[in-house]
Length: 346
Image: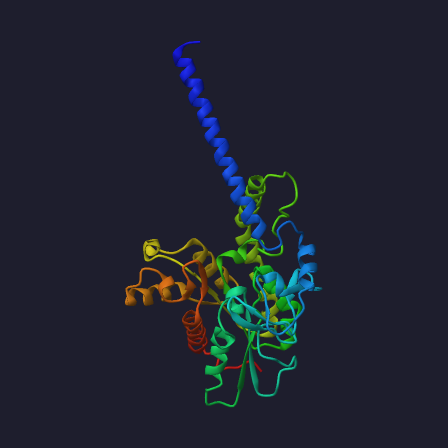
């Protein structure tokens, strides 16, 4: 064996040893992170069964979405918020009303001279990390009821954390329509086109024992869903039109963007924003332009990131109280400009 061959074998052995150590370290890190994941090692049915054991006790501290939800009997919904739950979640008190929504108590039958706005969404609409009075739905309701007209306004919050667009529309069909809304608002975020983080994640305990393998399998499954997810979600918008158009209910939608650097706006428009604009136009929905208005305001403030003003913290892109006030303002302005307030549904 020549000296060159020995040196090559030595380098290959060193490389193999280094890769093995890196794999062991990666396996340890992923195993630790997996152990901290909500529902780790559980199927959806097992996670929801465990969630059922978390009783609605006032003052309860809930660490994850799993503690807030229960299984739903409605097709396509999967899970729903637990009625009458009161708990501390993400640093704020969360109260779920008797109908299973984070909202003030409502009657199913619409009161006389009342105008109802149904709001569909996920954790952004739910009000992740902010007090109920700061959520944009409550801000809208307060401002609308200060209007000098004969109507009383109710802005119904149907937002549930981890819902995707299909679940939002399915829940609206199963439960929301019964409230007889006059307008529907839809808040869309990037992960609404993926499989639900809580409902459909692959079982971490299935298959090979390697945490690295499970991690790669999970990510590849989510990428596969994401590739086709936009098309499926846009189809759900068609279903929403089928539910609202015969009833004469206008639909307004917004694409919420969390943490984005100003430099990203060098591109004319994000592809998803373009797709949504077209899909909303195709379904005769009104598109509320959060994206462009956000950048106009950021430029006036000379802010480098939206994080500086409108989200909870650097690692959490959910809107803070100011961000919710901004969303409320945009929806109210859009409804006013579209003449919706002047011509309530009869």
